Image (cartoon, rainbow, N blue to C red; front, side):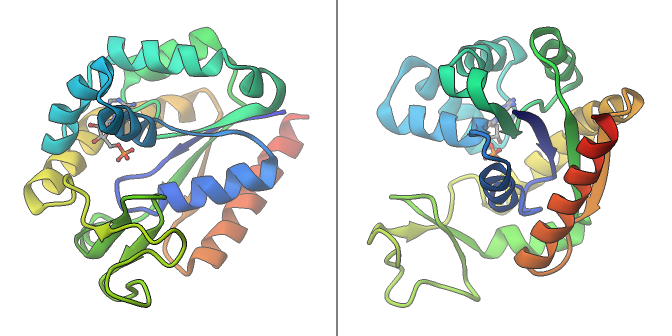
Length: 216
Ligand code: AMP
């Protein structure tokens, strides 16, 4: 089993690459953003609380997130196959709490400069049905209807310029300290996230495998 954490500012390709890494290593892909969006769509109490924060591009309180993640990490698939965390931890407090409840083998920092991610996010469009990611430059083949599931393809409510600026500021102020903290623990590997999705995936897999081999 393998226990991975993926860091990357919004628009770095973290979701796409996390899914590929999780599939490669056979670990459950745990995206806190996806979990919160599902909870919001289902109208659960946590989902309703989360929606206000998400639409404004602000982070939920650590206590709320710790409850969510602790419950998820106790599920049988995680106990059996490990995990790939995508979007958690997002603060130093979350990072410290995480290492209090589980070990982590490798933390990956998917590095993409801020000007590149701003461009990517403003053109990003997402299927409301299955979550598949498109862009203005590469839309679905017909009429903003998902090629995979037929769902409606729209801009995420938190991909507006104000919310994007807030999320990037939150990443800088709150998440970068967590990234550095993993580095001080000797767990961090930084990978260049600029390039085609295939190239980046190859780089990531190679970097994680090299680090896992060192640790064994
Ligand atoms: P993401 O899809 O990872 O960009 O997450 C979308 C939104 O969900 C974020 O902008 C936050 O509002 C919220 N969120 C997701 N993960 C966390 C976390 N670990 N801590 C606090 N808020 C989070």
